[in-house]
Each structure stands twice: as structure tokens, then as C-alpha cells.
Amino acid sequence: MLDALTLGRRVRTLRGEAGLTLAALAEAIGIAPSHLSVLENGKREARLSELQSLARALGVSLDRLLSAEAPTGRAALEIAWERAQAGSLYASLGIPPLPSRKSLGDEALRTLLALHGELERVHLERAATPEEARRANAELRGEMRARGNYFGELEAQAAELLRAVGHEGGPLSQRLAAELATHLGFTLHHVSDLPPSARSITDLEHGRIYLPAQHAPGRDPRTTLLQALAGHVLQRPEPRSYAEFLTQRVESNYLAAALLVPEADAVGFLQEAKTARSLAVEDLRDRFAVSYETAAHRFTNLATEHLGIPVHFLKVSAAGVLSKAYENDAVRFPTDALGAVEGQTVCRRWSARRVFDEPDRFSPYHQYTDKPTGTYWCTSRIESGSAGDFSISVGTPFAHVKWFRGRETPRRGTSTCPDPSCCQDAPPELAARWAASARPQARIHSSLLAALPRESFPGVDRTEVYAFLERHAPAAG
Image (cartoon, rainbow, N blue to C red; front, side, top):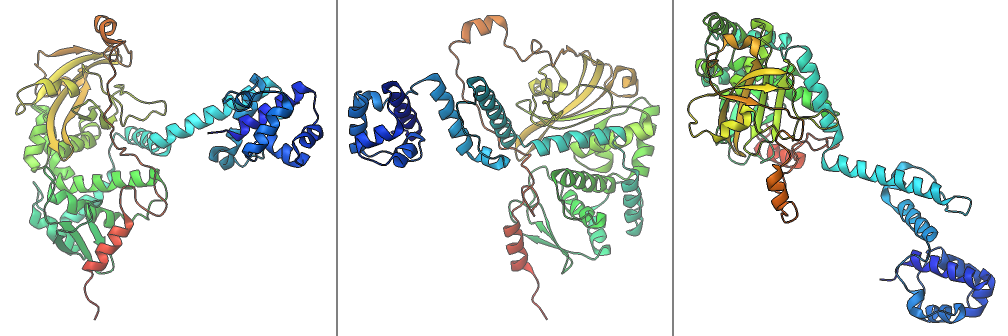
């Protein structure tokens, strides 16, 4: 296809080489000088008869006139700059156009094009992995680290709610969870047509909470209900940014976990285990009848505040991709340039990856790993969810492993990540054999960190939610 910008610059260049003025060439081909000027600026396409007349008047073949290559290096720069200014990115900057006059030197044009190219790259990168979400995750993880992942005000709210329904210790039964909903003024409705983008929907007008009739594998029905109740109890406004959305989600999840694993009971249980030098996440799981992931999260809430033990937590897919992480023990997680850990690949030599190689999935997996910031002991276990298998790991520095069951493990590892030579670079002999021949096709994963849509919650279709509520609202009167 004929490119109007390239043709225009070629006509201008050939006209200059032929020593013709704009008016003289326009007269020779029978058009107005203003029309020829528009053509040379690439603002309109030429008809075939005009092209033939131009070729004759300039003394060149039609093929040369229609060449796809820019006539000169300078013309190539001008064409690239015109195209950049015509794009949506330049328009979004609110900068007035800058014509590529002769006074604008080649070096200046190259600099402008390089700056535009870098802006384009950054914008594409942000679209692929939304910067707002990644920054918000990194900042929130820093806040959690500063407070030892302990939220005293939420612990107090959980204790008050449990007292209100007469909870006397131990696991929170489904009956008491339902009574808590009644205490807060809600009725429960289990439905089969809940929108796929929502775990639950709360109808504040009619005091209803809609829950799925069938829960996803590995999903505790108490957790879904308690998270919905927590969102109501906390009375947070609709989030205006991704940072607010993440904070509210962390608070709701924390309050729900504090109801499932009450602080007073859990701390006494953990302190006894520490005295016996037999701390174990699976014991906390069994004592309060929760998932291993919930028990691991709850352990990180209480370990530093009440036991004086710094810890770290990881949730890693079978492919080694990190989806959740927390640390206050100086361990170094893989991060991107913004400090975000989500979507990064964990070292192959960490227990979070090595546990997938173990045939025994019933027993906990323990390992010592020498890392750049010290030696750490970790306990890992594989869980299954709707997205497949993932590992949950809890670790602590060597100085604190004396309190944990499993410290006698003989398993050892050494990791120098993020040094690429640790496990990111292929072994030299394999690289030499296959580097020039291998061309794998990557499996594309949808992002869990989409930027916050305007007037909506990330990942939730508001139209579906409203339509659902309309279907299920009780009849008036």
C-alpha cells in the first residue's frame, strides 16, 4: 500500500534535486501549489494520473517515485516523527505539535524519537502488568511488615463479635457463623446463579447475603460468609483506587481469619507449643478446623506479636510463580523494578519449589536453605484449588528454628538468587546444545492485578451483580 508520508517526502526531495520550486512543479503537472504542498506533507493521497505526471516532470521512473524506502536519512526521521505525533500516545500528552522544520536538527529529531519510544515502551509495560496495582501491592506489603502483620484493632473487633454470639473457644462452627449473620441483621440465601465474578453478594437494603449453593473445591463455606460479614462490619467506603481495594481486602480477610482462629485461644495454643519446642502450622490447622493456608496466614499474624518469632510466608504455583508473600525476617523475595513480588518466579532451590518433587503429600516438607541474607528453615505443603496445585510455605531464620517441629530435617539447599547463575540461567552445556534451536511457545496467564475500573471493584461485573440482586430481591409490599 502506498504510504502518503513517504511519497510526499520523496516528491519534495526529487523536486529539490531537480531545482524546481513548489509553484513550478505544480504548474508542470497542472495542479495548484497548495494541493502539491498538501501532497508533499503527506496529508493527502495522489491519484494515478498525478503520479504519472509527477514522474515525468521530475524525470524519474514511476517505480522510483513509488519506492517504499524513505528518500534520505533526514526524510526517514521526519516521517517517523510525523507518525509519532499522529498517534494516540502523543495526543494523550497534551503537547502541541512540533513541525520537523530544517531548524530542528537530525540529532534533535533522534532524541525526540528516542524519548517517544521510551514513553511508548513504558505505557505498553504498564498495560501488560498494571503499575498501579503492583506499586499498591508493594506498599501494602511494607505496611504489613512494619506492624508484624498484626492488626490489633481487628483482633478486638473479632473478639467482640465472638462474645456476642456466645462463642466459648475452639473452632467456630457453621452454626455460630450463621448466628453471627443473624446478629448483624442478615438472612442467608444459597443460590445456584451467583455471578461467576463474585464469591458472595450482600444486599444491604433487604438484609440478605447470597452465597453459592456449591462451594469451590478446598473453599471453606464459613470463610465466604465471614468475609462478607467482615466487609459489612468494617463499613469501608467503596474503594477509589487499587491501593484502597487491596487494603480493604486484607482487612476483610484478616477479620474473617480472626473469627475462625480466635486470638485468645490461638495464642495460648501456640505458646504451649513453643514451650514444648513443637510449633507446627498443621497443628494450628487441626486445632481450629481451617485450611492449611488459613492456618499459615494466621500464624504470621500472631507469631511475631505474641511469640517474638519473625517469619515469612509464600504461596507458589506448581510452575514456581509467586502469588502471595509476606516477610518480616529479612528474607529476599524475587521482585520486579517496582518492588512487587506477584508474578515473579521463586528460586528452584527453595522449599516452596522442591516440595512439588516429593511423592509424599501427606507429611509436611521441611528444609534448610542458605540464602543471601542468611540460613532459613521452611515448612511447605501442597494444596489444591480451582486453579490447580500450589504450595504454602512458612519460614523463619535459623536462630528461631529451635521452636519448631521438623527442625531435625536433613534436607539442605543453597540459593544465590537473584543472581541469574543460581537457577535462572540454563546449565552451560544445555545452553550450548539448544540455544540456537529452541523456540518454546509461552503459556499466557491472565493477570490477577488488573487496574481498578472506574466505579467498580476489580474483577467484578457490576452489571451482573445488579441484575442478580434484581432477580432475587423480595417482592415489595
